Amino acid sequence: MIENASNIELVVMRRVRLIRILLLILSTATLAVLTAVAALWGIGREVWVARVFENGPQDFFGRMGYFWYAFLHTRLIVQALVVLTLGSLAFLIREVIRFFFPAR
Image (tube, rainbow, N blue to C red):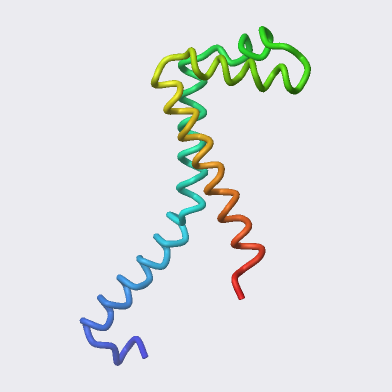
């Protein structure tokens, strides 16, 4: 079939293959993971994360209140990165659920 293919057919099929490869590489789940990693890297650059965990209480409810207080009293860039991280992780969880339990 390749011998009989016209030039336009070869160009179109090359583009179709390229689009399929790009869709596999740049899926929404991949973008969600990359966004979460980039946002976590940004948080790590802005905040000394180990100190945040050391300074907080050790019980669950006390820790949740401490994180909420720390979130409210930090810089805007850190708040934006935290929201971006949580949003991308929620989107990734949604994509994983949709993958394992497809709509009928």
